[in-house]
Length: 215
Image 1 (cartoon, one colour):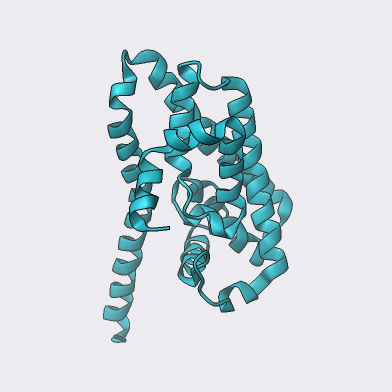
Image 2 (cartoon, rainbow, N blue to C red):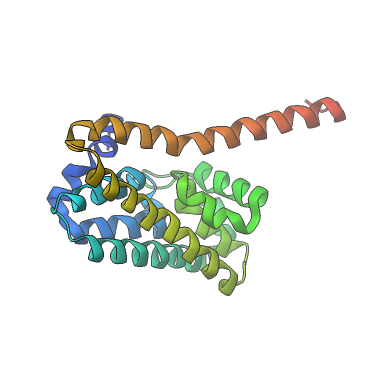
């Protein structure tokens, strides 16, 4: 998949929704949260757009919300199980079209920094949300604890973003005219936490180097 195709898919998720419908949305949410090769899927923009289309009567709202929530929670649980089974071997895996070792390492660093809250926070960071449950499984987080954070994160992210799109479609007249700019804002906003995290990590690294004299 070329960068142009990926960018188009992220910014025009309505094409995916029209093509695959409710079942497609649920499967995409599951794949992005539960399968390591689902990191490129447009989760944030897809959920928001699905909620918007539901407000226009093009998708059933309640089945959409329930399906997205279940897919998000089950997806993370599958990722956790995969991490438990694969263990450290994941980090020695060769790069391929559908797997980049640096993504797993990025999620591991995020997990080490934020601990259990990673399972909630990572939901809003593309790529990290795919690998965070895998890393939690590798780190042998107790499943009961993982599940609690998983349910909270799945609800805030899956149901929250979908409802945001739904209510926007209800309250703004002719909201479809502004859908693309709104999606652009959502995509950019979803990247901000990751950028801030990387910036802080770099700053912390520079401070350590200054104190220790190690370059």
